[in-house]
Image 1 (cartoon, one colour):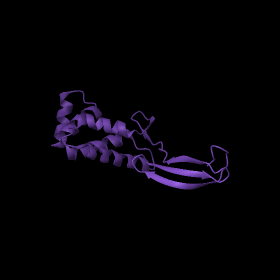
Image 2 (cartoon, rainbow, N blue to C red):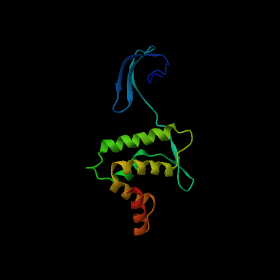
Image 3 (cartoon, one colour):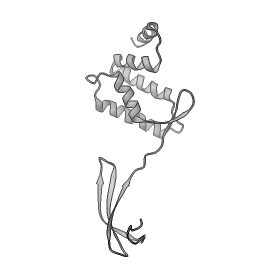
Image 4 (cartoon, rainbow, N blue to C red):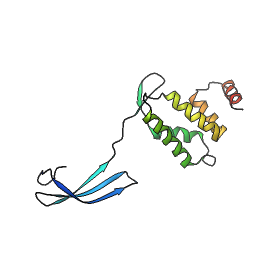
Length: 147
């Protein structure tokens, strides 16, 4: 770390505070050459995690996009926001730890499996978009599969 005043690379940490909400660490430093104090912040860099789309292209995984898609399908009285957040974070962990990029199909199937256990109506709403239903018979076939 370079002192912003004299560019010296030696300093000592005078105070350290963690902010768990923001995921940052604040360090108050003192330059060992000029004696002036300055503040630095440390945070974990977000890792670019990619998924494979249906057309074979790569796209950066976006947990907010996943959550938004689920929220469109669910009734908040039946599935709470913390439940949705926990599920989405679990999917994000799977995407991050997978040796190969997960496919959007795999992620969609994870959502469908989860919704089937939580709320069958939300499952049908999500499935109608995800599976691209084109007629009432598509709904009937899918409904027969979950009953």
